[in-house]
Amino acid sequence: LEKVEVQIFPDLKAGSLAIAKTIASLIREKQKLKQKCVLGLATGSSPKTLYAELVRMHKEEKLSFKNVVTFNLDEYYPISKEAIQSYNRFMKTHLFDHVDINPKNIHIPDGEVKKEDIKAACSAYEQLIEKAGGIDLQILGIGNNGHIGFNEPGSGIYTKTRLINLDNSTRIANSYEFANISEVPRMAVTMGISTILKSKQIILMAWGAGKAKAVKAAVEEDETEHVPASLLQSHANVTFIVDEPAASELT
Ligand code: F6R
Image 1 (cartoon, rainbow, N blue to C red):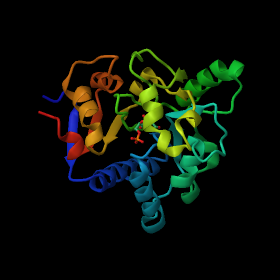
Image 2: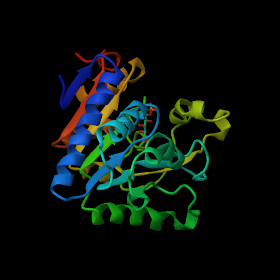
Image 3: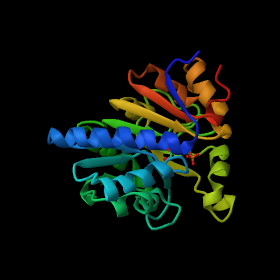
Image 4: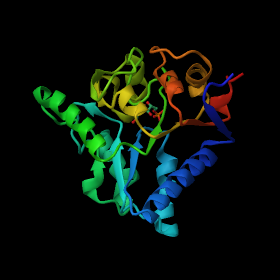
């Protein structure tokens, strides 16, 4: 039995369009109230179609991002912002270069910061989120191992933005972006579970049969740090948007 709301779509395109509509409505609602809309954003393969749809809505349906403030979940460490594999670059390529967002409103963890400055950078990131009034809507993907952001198994509910070691399974899953596995960074900076749980609303997307086990564990089994996405069960406003293959293990 599902412990959080799950919406099943025939394919990732249909699911992505549904998420884009939710985001667009929130942006427009906040515009009417003359308020900022604070979005938490993910990278990776899962949100590409979602971002393409938001770009289309900007170009064809006058969806403006002028009132949008964004905080990305994570970034590899160390990595240059210009590297094709960096999430800073990913966000430009897939979204920010194609919409009218104010660059000052974009926040992504910095993979270039010196090691001795990381702690300060992480707490500054937390403070920026708070100063922005908190995240209105956090978009998440899910790792094969159940991670959210780069909160690998073992990450607890009190974790904040911090430097983490990537699981080997995550490095393997993401190695397609790199020339070979040894090029995949061993660390990342990620929002913590507590950072994510403070968002007012959370949407997690999962596409494909490869995610079916993680989705099942996250929504049907007990909350456990071994499956970080299961820790979302304690949140009052979370929806899993999945395609049929990702839902295939649900009872
Ligand atoms: C990326 C992130 C990760 C991914 C997850 C799934 O910003 O936070 O948790 O969402 O690793 O990645 P894909 O979508 O590539 O399967």
